[in-house]
Length: 605
Image 1 (tube, rainbow, N blue to C red):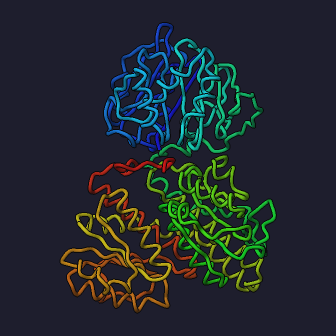
Image 2: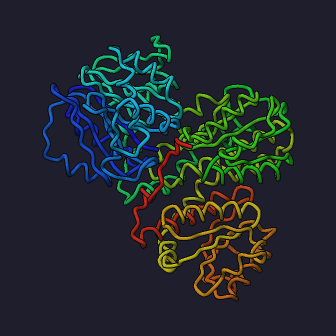
Image 3: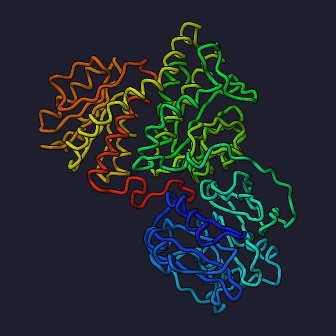
């Protein structure tokens, strides 16, 4: 959840750290802090609140240092405050560190340390770590970190400074992302690549339990036993411009408008007008081997999984199970070596989804990861990976990554259908044509942006919003409702349209906004009937529907989108929902890219 950065080299360390934290603030923005190693001491500066407060505080500070670490916090243990902010340290500040993750046994460790005379000043789990390091230290930092990992339970990415080693940065990680950036006479660490991409494209992705000893001219990686290991350096191919706003007011706005390109990039090399097949995997996936398929994901990715279930069951007629990752972990799922478990995560680091993946592997299932980040934990640990090709997604509320996930699910559906002989050549050609046409149709929806903005302006003061739909339209409605909650902070719920009369219609009153999704032509008449029922009770009705749908006596407002094969309509139906949420948030004067209490990558349980 939190973001950490570190640098050792010859640049202005303070500026490198602040720049890196700016690229990572989407991971948490309750507080921020930096620690800089000088010849005499480790100087710590931290501030409760947004990063801009720390930038203002340090603006005129001229600190001579070639080594430092920084942190931007999403609070877990302890409220946002100066004392709870990172970096944390031992009593004499000879050991200073930043942490992303959760130490599950921190109370046990804290009580042990208090009995031995150690003092604590914060409410955090992190503060036990520098004190524990001090207790374990016997002259060797690496030996100490080896012992530390034996004592800690939970997740952690740690960047650590020792005052007696003023030119060296130490790191360890488990279940939280940590990446090394290799430069010339300088090196970097961060939770995510954009933090240092303007300086280097050469990266090493640390594995769990690995330790790193980093100086300006050298990076050494060790396993949990303290043995030095060879590592692979990867080159990042996307540009720093992809991680910047590029003239848009917000990252979310930029990422919404990038979706036509994202669709084309995700399809590239996998499906084309000239092929009669779907090229998804370098390795062989014998789909006929499996008698059970699970989709497992959280949040927005879970909504993509629900659409995948509906699509595969309809087109291929095989049952699919879908679970929220946190539930899958604890329900003792029926999984064996004939099960395919598909896990979906934008970051590839989502804690519950990663744990679900590991459980599936323990039960001998084959695992398929649908992820956006090459080299992420889910990518590395999945048997097979399908990349979404969305590029860096910075806004906390996911837009383009969700669209790319849907496109990957469409491709996976075609792949399974072909391998199982469930699709004729004419059916494949028709489906292929529809999928290849999605990027252009998304562009047509985005051309309506000003009309959608005016609709959002009309309804942004709504206190309660209900989304309804049937079949896949209901799953689209769930995603629309989530977006509105995430960034506009408007109370919103999604219901199957047929369930309104079983309770929710009691909540309808004057000025309640009901948003109906009408893409499934088999069910439009029934959903229209439901919309008329709420309208008769005073609700305002906004409908997202295909062009040509007659809604003259049903809706107060309509957003029409291009017609497409209903199996692949979810991408198009969701674009107006993203824009409605975005503009309602703007009119409510919220921080679109950094919604309160949320972080981009949920790397703790």
